[in-house]
Length: 223
Ligand SMILES: N[C@@H](CCC(=O)N[C@@H](CS)C(=O)NCC(=O)O)C(=O)O
Picture 1 (tube, rainbow, N blue to C red):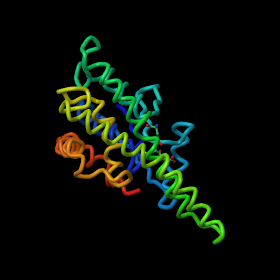
Picture 2: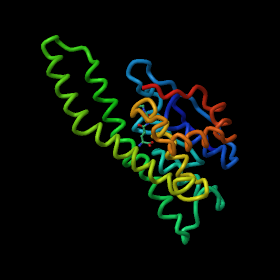
Picture 3: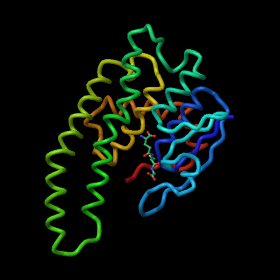
Picture 4: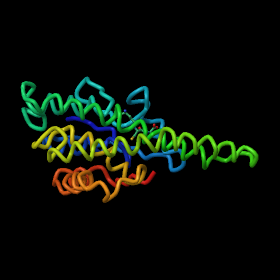
């Protein structure tokens, strides 16, 4: 039985969803983020040295990195489902989005979280204007342009097909769900990008997505 080490309100929700889509039995080991730091509890380091979620255990295998986990599960247990055949034109698109989610979409969202936290961090009063100046510059020169560029890019891509890799729903759509769900609170994704909002509505309506929510517990990306 596959075991998923699942942190609340996190990327590991995607792994539960994928397992539900594949109809595989699995066990969930739950961990709670620290309320202030949002970090995972130290117990996760006993499972994998980096102490991040998701991690899965499949027999002797301990596997971290959501992209690797999604690819592993879809390839090993998909039996042709949720991934285009390697010879098909959809396959390069599939691996592109599978990697893009963590490799390109997530870093600017993480930088935004870090800089929001710097702005709110306790500091001597004389340091505050300096910190605000630096944060403002990074927002204007790095965070904001990338936010717009990535959201526009993803919106345009979904304008040409129902799902990221084409007309069929794939594991790449599952992998893309987290940056897009996070983008609602962290990057101001809203109705001005109708393709992305329709994508989110479509995935949220999937019965497997709903079942994964029941298994994983509360899932709110409000940070
Ligand atoms: N690129 C990794 C990122 C893993 C990661 O940062 N996971 C977050 C959850 S969304 C985490 O464990 N955060 C808690 C911590 O860093 O202590 C992946 O896709 O699995």
